Image (cartoon, rainbow, N blue to C red; front, side):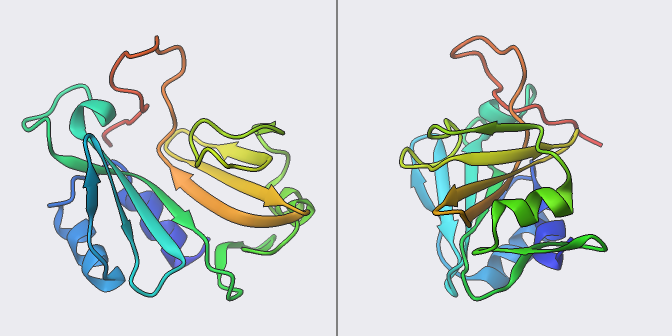
Length: 170
C-alpha cells in the first residue's frame, strides 16, 4: 500500500482538528469548502480530494454536531503515482480493472450503474471492503479513472438513520 493510501486509511473518521490530520491537510494545501453537513478539500497540487461529513453522520456519540470528520479520500492523479502498492503489484489511475483484480483479488462488490457513494456521473465500479475501510475504483473505457478510500457504510441502516458510516473507534 502506498504511503498516501496508508495515511488516508489511518486518518479516516478523525476530526479536522486532530493533530495528525491537520498536519496532512497542511502538506496537501488547499482549503476546506463546506456545504451544509458535507465538506471537501482538493489538494493544491491536484490528484487528491478529501471528503468530510459532520460528526452525526460518522459516529453515534459526539461533542459538537458541526465538527467535520474525514470519511473519504479520492485519488484522481493520472501521473502514474500508485494509489495502492503491495507485493502483488502497484495500482495507479489509468491501470486496467483486470490489474486491480489480479492485485487485490475478487472484489467484494461491483456494479455497472452509477455508485450512490461517488459522484452522480460515476462509471461502473469495483469495491474491496475490510472492517475499517473500503477501496472503490471507478472504470471508464477499461481504465481506472478514480480510486476512493472511505469508511464503510453501515449495513442495514434505514433511510435517514444516522450515523451512516460503520466507524469503529480502535
